[in-house]
Image 1 (cartoon, rainbow, N blue to C red):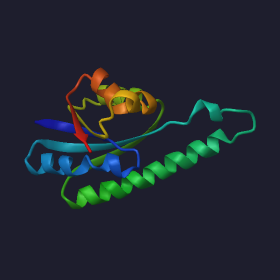
Image 2 (cartoon, one colour):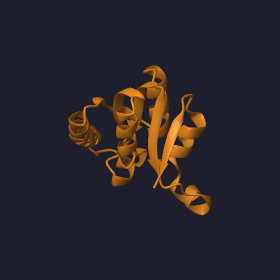
Image 3 (cartoon, rainbow, N blue to C red):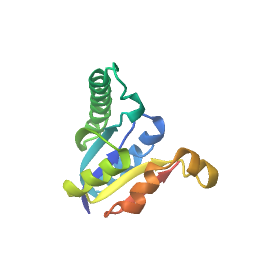
Image 4 (spheres, one colour):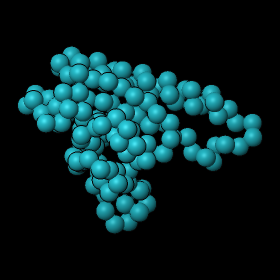
Length: 142
């Protein structure tokens, strides 16, 4: 049994493909608590003089909180015990550290499953998490 399941979301439909699988885990009695996590990562190229970094960060955090609250409402209506978190930082690193600090037992992540050149061009948060996480990772390939 996985008491705490962490589902990183980025606001995309792709990431939300993990949610039906999380609902299924709950319905089968495999999990008790679901944590929806979104990481706000502001590119360092935006840190130039005169740029309203604080305003952008505040807007991104607010947008993420609103988004997660909507997903939380949907999942709560299905009977799930859902918590939300919004953090700032490097996406993969922040997800791994959050899982470690909060005794998460399973990470559920949707991915395109890119390989080869696409993998090199786009990078892969899912691959970094799969490599560095110290808990089981369920990758939902879309």
